[in-house]
Image 1 (cartoon, rainbow, N blue to C red):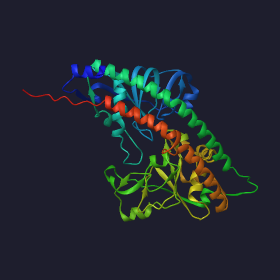
Image 2 (cartoon, rainbow, N blue to C red):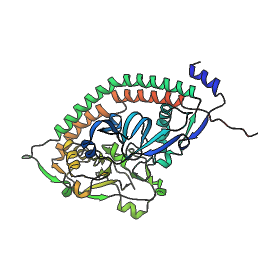
Image 3 (tube, helix red, strand yellow):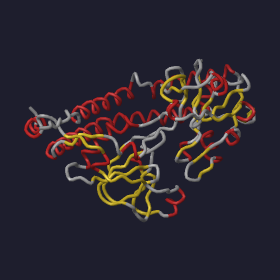
Image 4 (tube, rainbow, N blue to C red):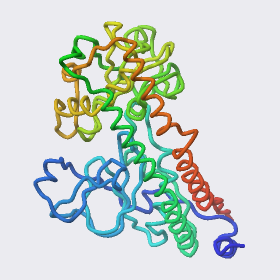
Length: 402
């Protein structure tokens, strides 16, 4: 029997108490800070935001808003529900929620591991832009075992996390090297001599349209819908790429229909770098519509292959154009007229297919989750999640009334 099993048998054999986040934490939000503000106030204290890369760090400034042990979580966007442990002096942007433990019966580090499992379950993606707002976070119930049990769980998971990270680091480094090679060839194969290849603008080749907006209650059943995360996370979309559903009328299906060859762009995000992420539909998907958080570019010619579009609109040249023309206040935004400025090379379909075939081979090597390094990395992560979830599962204590 492990030390943890012994502690549970000794201290909580009949189960543990559950409490809501609002019972054990003070809940606040970050403040609006643009990249320009951060660049103008460079210092040593980190600013955390919604992205998961670099532990969520957006930059460093000369002042800080918080000090000590906290948890932050991403409230909206593609990473909504992601939870982070913070300890030190730092600030967070307005798309981050903040939790400060106010109860002596729970460890912040233990709560971090628990919410890493629980918070993603409460993300609402119904409106197309995933959200986990403070009022929902407040109602999440978590197990609160005795402190000795929490300490042992934290000890085990910290060790396991470190080991898993070390084992995955070498695999991730190799995968990043392959992805860097892939990105080089993607941009190399999509670079053309403008004296030999003609170009047309997106405005000449596509009709750009805003998507469907519906009340929250309409989501969860009905017709398939292309949402923000579907576009953000996929270079192309087929009938198996998304799970979102929405109740719509036939007239709405006709207005917001999705066709093979349609290119979708994310319309708004917290940073310029995350807007205009593109995904192309490569299958026929009957009665599918698209969300108001994305823009649909429908081809008005037959000059372009769908897969060619999928690759081309993810190149550095296109991304730079989208970012250059984007507007930014509290959120970054792109529009149809701005996307219309993107220039697209006009090649023969035979030449397009030749490029697609080469990139498909590289894409499979780097991204196919069913083989190679990505599968190994995923296996490590699933192993970690299995043991983490098992350690954090408790029977709820039933208080019997006399």
